Image (cartoon, rainbow, N blue to C red):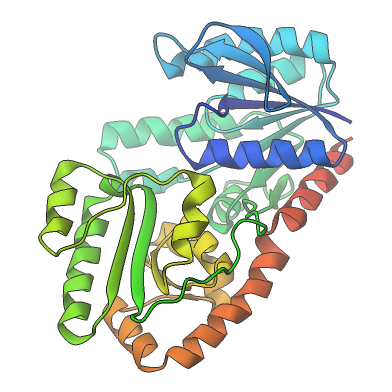
Length: 355
């Protein structure tokens, strides 16, 4: 089976979790004997190379990454002729439209992975003009014909069903490498409360809320605080006033090392699930609809806590034995639903069904 994967960026060029997800899927497919070639943007001249054993067609994104929407079409055309794939697997946002056009031109089945799908929720984050553009862009992408659409979270899956794509949609979560993200707990004398994010400065409200929580907890309990991630000077100063030094950006392959130092993790997204995989007691930091739906499986199973953060942490610190036992139980849930083996087998099943 030959798969042509199409993503706006591919390591070592990264902008967020999408590239990590794509890299993980590609490497695991190759391990299982599937022939995978990648077409992706990069900040370099057009070329073909092997990166970490993976064949990659690089597309020069100069002068802007948005040019990928046009340049990608011609790169895909060349790759399809040379590779002769059985399936094109595209990832939102900017690979979707050109990949769909090429799939129709060469009569190739196409699978689309939806990395996020906000629809009307865009209007909660941006002004009406930006929000309208993003909303219409998502709808235009999903108006095109696909053989199968993979949602990587429950919220995206619900939105796909809501706009009439139930028959084509399948929910397959982002994989967690449980060989790396696993309990290897560091012993310490005080409970450690922490958070890790790719960019801490991206959510000023969330960080201010976390700082307020830390002040409350410290007034009553003797705890350590661990905060890691990219940040600006303003945020550094806020934590510095509390005597907390923010750990600079942590490469993804080293995140598990820091998660195993944390007892109570406050956060959301993949970092929160990785924290669960490392045996942390995990609290959802922002229970807006978007994150509540994203984390619905683990919330429903009782392995991610929601509610008043101070009261939750107070309960945990007063009854650590119970909550640590629940955190250990969560490991089986992670393995069954989010481990690499569980996820990749479902993606291969999609390929087989499409063919």
